[in-house]
Image 1 (cartoon, rainbow, N blue to C red):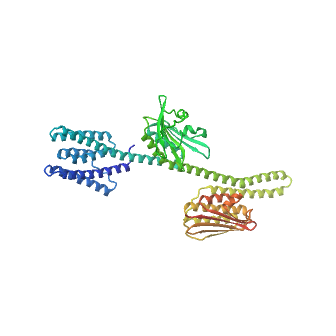
Image 2: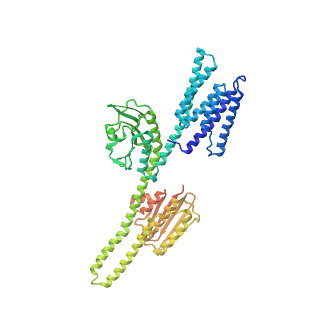
Image 3: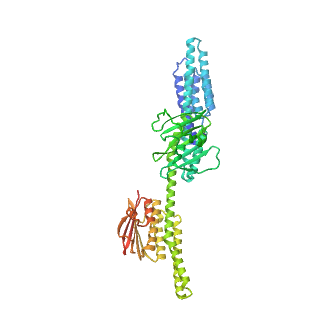
Length: 556
C-alpha cells in the first residue's frame, strides 16, 4: 500500500536522523584509528558529509513541512567514494548500514538485498587484498563478510519493519474512516470487507453477526469481482455453525486439500495453540466453495458477537496473516459497534416519532373527522325538514373544520426541524407565547429567571419542544384560562415549570415519570423527550383545579 504524505514525511525524517547519527559514529570510528594509518582526506570527506547531514536535520526541524532530502543515489555514491578513501572497514560499516536502512524504509527490497550481498563480497575482497593469504586469515575474511551480511540484513529488517508498521497503521485508519454512520451500515461493511479482500488477496470476505435479541443472524458477503452492492442476508440461528465456523474462542485457519483437512489456530484469549483443532462444518465449505479460510471473532459490548471470514487467497494463509486479521478485527470492532448502535438508536427514534404522530392524529384530527362525518350524516337526514337548524349546525361544523385545520397546520409546523441555541432560546419562547395567546385566547405569563442562558444546543432544542408541547396540551385538554411558565437555571440543572388552572388530569397527587409509566398516565411525548436528555419529569394534578408539570434536566 502506498504511504500517505504524512507517513512518507515521517520516514524521511527518520532517514535524515539516522544519516546524521551513523555518519557521526563512522567519524568516531575513523578517528579511533592509529594516527599512522589515518588518511586526512577521508576524515575531511566524512566531516563534510556530517556537516551536510546535520544541516538537513536542522532545516527539517525549523521548516517543519520541508521535504528537502539528500538523494539516496548521492548516499550510495558517497559510500563508494569513502570505501576508496578510508583504510577503515569498521568506519565504512556505519555508512553501509545507513544506506541499507534507507533502502528498506523506501520499500526497495531488491536493491537492499543486492547492496548487502555486493558489500559483503567487496569487504571480503578488500581485506584479502590488504593482507597476506593464510588459512587463519581466510576464516577472518569469511567472518568479516558474514558479519557484514548479517548486520546488513538486520538493519534492512528494521527499516522494512518500520515501513510495514506505518503501512498497517495507515490501513487501520482507512478502515476506521470507512465505518461511518453517514455512509450507512451496509455500505460501510461492504467497503470494509472489500478492503480486506484487497489486503489479503482473497476471493471472498464475509461478516456474520448474531443478534440474540432478535434471534437472527445477519450475514454480509462480498466477492472480489462483485460490482453491485447487496444487503445482508437474515438467517435463522440454525445456520450459526455455517457462518460462525466452530467456537468463538478460537481464531483459526483451515485448508481443504486433496481430500485432507488441516490447519492451525489458537485460543484468542490466551494465545495458546489449539492442538486438536476442530474442522469447520461441511456446510461452511459448501456455502463459500472454500478451499481455505481464516475465521476471527468480532466482539460487541465486550462479548463475542460474530465472525469475520476470509476465503480462498491467492497464496496460502500463514500464522502472520491470522495475527494481522485479529489485529484488524480488534481495531474495527468498536467503530463497527458504534455504527450498529447509532443505527439502532435512529430506528428507535424514528419509531417513537412515528408512534407519537400516529397517536396525535388518531386522538385528534381523525376523531374530529369521524365526528364530522356522523354530524353530516345526521344533517343530511334532517335538512329538508329543518333548514334553519341545519344552517346553525353547518356553521358549527365550519368552525370545527377551521379549528382542526389550524391544529393540523400546527402539527406540520412541529414536525419541521428546529434549531435552538442559548442565544435564541429567550426570544423563541416569548415569540411562541405571543402567538399562543393570539391563537388560543389563553392568558400566558412567561418568566425566564436568567437573561443569559448557557445551555447545550440539544438541551435547548428538547426543552423548547417540551415547552411548546405542554402549552398545546393545555389548549387541547385542560379547559384552562391562565397558564404560568417558569424557566430557571443554576450551576447543576435547568428547570421548566408549566402551571395551569384547568381541570387537571384524571388522577390526583404528585407522580414522577416512572410512576406515570406504571399507571399508564401522563404526556407520553414529554416523558420521552425528558428521558432523551437524562432529565426528570414530575406531574402534579388536582382535578378541577389545574395541574403543574415540572421538568428538570442536569447540565453535567
